[in-house]
Each structure stands twice: as C-alpha cells, then as structure tokens.
Amino acid sequence: MKINIPETAVAAQFLTEAAARLGLECATSDKTAPQASTVTAALSREEEKKHFIDLDIPTLPYLLIETQEQFHKFIEETEVELFARPLNKHSYDTNLVLQNAEDAEQAWEDYQGQPLIIENNVAFDFTTTLIAARNKQQTVFYPLVYTVYADQVLHTCIAPLGDTALQEQAETYGKLLLEKLNHIGVFTLRFAVKDDKLYALGFTPSLDNVGYLTLEPFCSVSQFELQLRAVLNLPLPTPEITKPTTSINLIDALPDETIIKESLHYYRYSNLPETSKILGHLALSGESFDEVKEKIDRLQAYFK
View 1 (cartoon, rainbow, N blue to C red):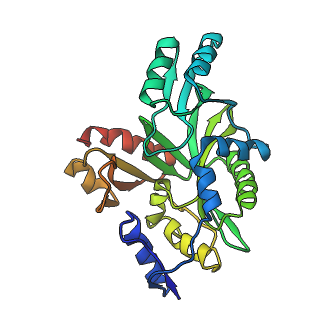
View 2: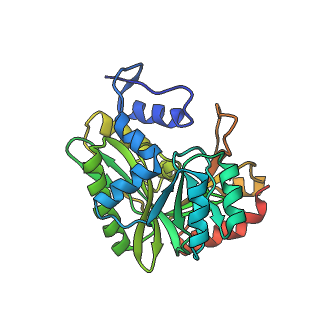
C-alpha cells in the first residue's frame, strides 16, 4: 500500500518513520484526509462556533462584526472587556484586547477591515487540548494535555493532565464533533477551563503541534502513527502516557546547551516557511505533573 507524505511538511520525517514501522511505502495518492468540508469549517471561527452551538458544547458567546460602524457601535454599548480575532484563521493570529474606542480603531486598522469575531475576555483557569483519532470503526483519545501559550503561540504542553472529570467531558464533546464532521484521522480540540468546566475554543482536523509530545518513549503510540492507521482504516490502539512528559516549543530562538543536555530529545525543524515562529521543540519528563512544571520553570533562564 502506498501513501502520500508531502516532502515540505515539518512532520514529514515523523510520518515517514511511522509509515516504515507499519510496512508502508511512501508515494503519491489522489486520496485525501481530512475532507475539504472539515478543513473549511476549521478555518472559519464562525463555522467552528456554529458546530459547538449545534452540539450543545459550551463555548463563549460571540458576535460577528463586518463593518467599522458596527464595530464602533458595539464597543460603545459594551462595558465588559472584549477580545477580537479575525473571522478566518491565519498563522499566529493575535487576540486583540478591546477596552475602549481607541482599541477598537487600532484593531480594525491592524486587521485591515477583515470581518472579526468578538468575544468576552474571560479569565480562564488554564487551557487544555484533547487529541483524538478516528477511523471508520473506532475513536480513541489521548489523555488531556495541559497547554501554555505565549502571545497566542503554543509554548508548552504537559501530559497527562490527570483530571478524570475533565477527561470524560472532553471525550464526550470530542465524539459528538468527530461524528458530526465524519472526520477520519487525527483531530485536536482545544478547551479553556473555568471552575472545572470546559469551554471549546477551536479545533484542528489534522496533526497538531500539541501532539509532538506523543513521539516520546513514555507514550504508547504517536499521533503520526495513529494518523496513518486512521486514514488506512487499520486498528487504533488506545494511547497511553505512562510518565508525565512535556514538549516545549522553541519560539523565535534556539535554547542554551544546558537545557538541551537535560532534554529527552531536541528537534530542530528544517524546510520551515519564512513566517514560522516555531523553530523546533524539545522534550522533558518527570515523575509527576508538578515535577515537570517545576523543571520547566527552573530551565526557563536557559532559553536564549
């Protein structure tokens, strides 16, 4: 059996290695996954929101703003702090916090008159991501991943989160969404957590940077292998993470040798687009979730 793996993909090396373990030959193919309709939905924040609302998955209320006049009127009539994002997703979009008319004017100028999604700027407790994989018969889930962002770019992931109640909530929502979209392959669903309740933020119908920690030895199967298994309709093993593991994205700079020596693995990416902020990542592990967090805090000084 032959599969297509784009040579320019950052994940090409990892997919090729997974294909070799499964005895697959890499070549070209006219079959694609995910479906175009799923990708289209994932690229529009309004379409994402509609899917969440249709399935009764909690998410922040939103308003679509299409004109500058509509934008200014809404800001003048609203007393709570808001944030704005473009309707259509782009790499490294920034959430602009809006406190007054001047902020609104700046946001409209920064986004060059694009339609915007406006939401309340809620102080969540933290964010987490569910990684799933689905073929024609099965759906499997990884343990929830604790995530930290720096200027809207993913910086740190730690898994497993280890919260059974949140895991059950997330898997329930994940199953609903995967079935509605009829998605085949790996899928990530991002949540914010407030008072032990999940609020859906968005989804990605493909391999995701969050899933790079699944490459490490304490994870029973990588997201790359599950992607191939799902697309080829091979059995999907239930993923397990046996020891707390983190991946730290290297944003705009590479790390000091001290942190490289302490890491499980250090990955420096090649074939990156000029706009890429993430130059690579490294992995660490510990005996507990708290120990991993402490190790990350201690090593922060060694990032350039």
